[in-house]
Length: 159
Image (cartoon, rainbow, N blue to C red; front, side):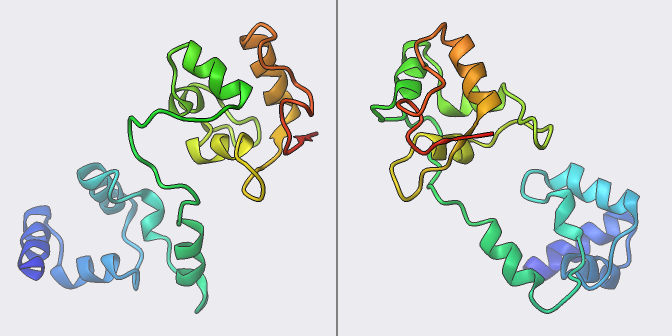
């Protein structure tokens, strides 16, 4: 059934079915317009980087490891944490995901990922240091309720 669906899609899109299978199996890079059409049709299941060809025998394994989340994501689940930042977010009726989505990571220029923000308030050994710029931003936003110090951010503050 899957074969029939892929081949039917290839015909409707004006593609050779063998080429479409090669794109999906990452044996051949699709032209930019085909990649854009596939991403537009199937995002977020299909992302632009899904068509990056492996450069060596270990790339597929590394990608699988990197894409495995450390925390299970359950949409809408409230964050139960005694951390000052989590308490402040609950008081503002915000989720960690809301805050992350609305703040840009200065290192990447992209919004923070919820999993990364959650690591700032996680217990050891999963804790991750928060960037100083971000700790100071949170202190300003919270009007001093969440201080930018090591007592608040026990995993540390990264320069």
